[in-house]
Length: 253
Image 1 (cartoon, helix red, strand yellow):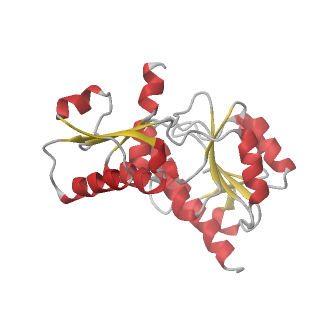
Image 2 (tube, rainbow, N blue to C red):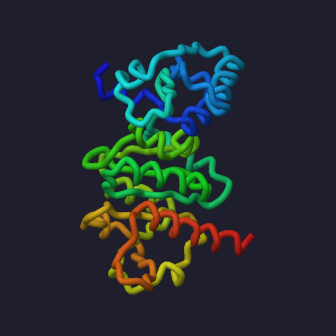
């Protein structure tokens, strides 16, 4: 296993480790806790590990630092595999099982792990069916992503696709409407119908939507801006857009 793959199987930070312990304890092979951390939050993690009979090692901070996990907050969980990405085939099964119109979040080339983690957290809060990202030129499910997601990496299916444009076309064939966000679009987010089977597409931090991705969208919408800045951070924009979809969907229940 490569150093990168080993790192991807580390879950760091209190919130992320706590959620993994509660939701997928069988996915953890070992828990490392900084031995001189005796605060209440760390004791809760010790108690959870004991309750699930998970191997617990009390170690010096230097040992945690050597795992390569930055900002670990005194705790590192070694996952057997972690909750890894979902395949496109698994996504098809997931969509077939949906009892409500699916709501998907598609991220076109987001490279900042903090942004991906924040998007996963918003997706969890909005009840998103799955988050879709491209395999290349985008950040994957790193320890930093898991930490920022605060447990959402363990609750929201993350689908990694080889060809994003082809994946969007496949979704359209399944009856899912593709709505992309673009600050130059003439239609406002609040004017667009977001109540049916839907995939919301967000562009990358700098360049926005790529040309092929844009061409796959059924609609392009903009988020009205009242200030001097022309755009929002991608994770903030994702939260705004997702919760407008949630608001519209609740209005018909």
